[in-house]
Length: 386
Image (cartoon, rainbow, N blue to C red; front, side, top):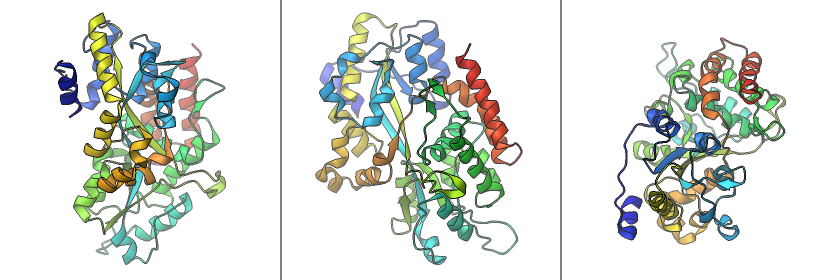
């Protein structure tokens, strides 16, 4: 819809280059590293914003922002758009991490409500891990989330929620780069490992699930609770009905096993738009108009209310009329948006690819979590201290 509006406003017909999300980043790296000026507009996952900007592949977009405009957006999102004091991308669309549960299963087991802390998750998960046909095999797992070691981005990203829910962050301000050799990261990986091996409320198959397979487990009735993205909600409602499925914020650590009190934190995934620094001058202007249109109220409203993605203008979520007309917007606000955390991490893709196999082995109990994180951090230190 935004593409049609852009053509109507400018007379310029945008021509997209379609590709799968799995190969988008490698394709972009190929033509940008060769200084090819087309495509002029780049669709960039937040994981790669820092790398593209530092490499000199993105045109600065400071002229699209000012101090008044900065107050319009979610406070976390603009920090991810700005690298070394300059804006290189504008907010496009996103999604938020939240949790889903089967109300009907909770009622059947006499459970009053969804978990608020890690400890709650463990105890409730045990009561909802069920062998319904009494054949000795688990038919319903208490918890499922995507933790596929075959997709490094998914595995690395899903570890973040457990770090953030302790009130911690991954980017170390003193080091200036990610630090996973921390007590909070160890707590997070140990907890995930325990969900599978100690508490046995998550299937060992968790390390094979991407975002959609994890959702499928939930929709097929094979899991009572799901940690996943906001786009899962409409699909869950259409499958079970709104009376049988509910949402809750990501559980905070709550002091469990010596962890901090923590916070309800939701990863906000930012898919941003940037301008190819190697594009011809006049095409850069056209690309900037695209970015300007997309980060406008209208562009962000369409993404939030019509496409059911996350726009990043706060007023959209706080507007009573919008909430009344589009109830899903209030759901996004309450269970994800107001708890949102965005980090744009340098060299994120390299770290994710290196760490995937090691993290997957740790979750399955095949590697020590502490030694795993030490090994990953040694790799990270090597990247930034060369």
